[in-house]
Image (cartoon, rainbow, N blue to C red; front, side):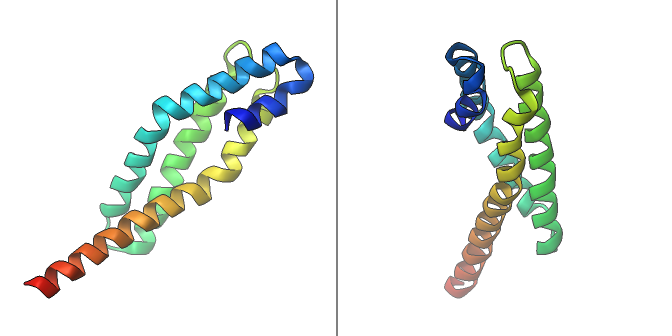
Length: 117
């Protein structure tokens, strides 16, 4: 995502584009894993799969979008809104995939446990 943000801001100068890219990369590195784990945990909290997928997709996506936009609003990103658009586009399908994978893994493990017992 840092590379994408670099090219979004490249016309404003390589130094400003680099600052924006590094902020994006730092956010992804520091908070990306935490938000993914949060999504996985939410996907397991609800009995209904539909409810679990919706909540485990929407809440982490909104947190990520707001946080990324805030990071880019800080001094140094020439195009903060444009720099957030890739996150808006990718976060919903990304977190849906994460929650689907985790919930499917849990169901598979439960079935295997029933077979063993």
